[in-house]
Amino acid sequence: MIEVDEIEIGGTTWVGVRKRGAEWSWLTPQEAACLGAEWVAKYGTKLTSEHLALSMLPAQP
Image 1 (cartoon, rainbow, N blue to C red):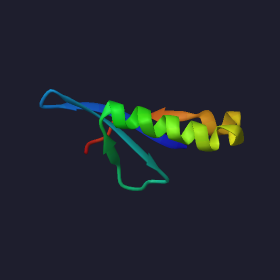
Image 2: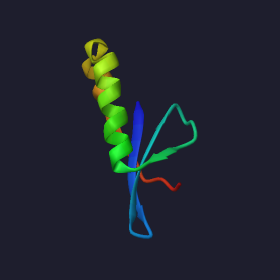
Image 3: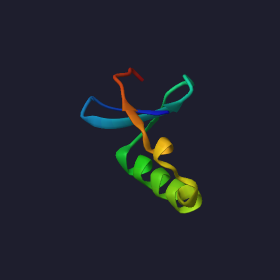
């Protein structure tokens, strides 16, 4: 399961992503959208309903 979190620090919104307990990667919303689009273009044909589960958990950068 991919974990996703969104926080605001000093007026800046950050989107965090991680998998399997790895360190959080913090991106701007624009960077996250670009990365997501790249992943869909490259790997979208390999998706199953199991892969679509996202966990919105609180986190700290």
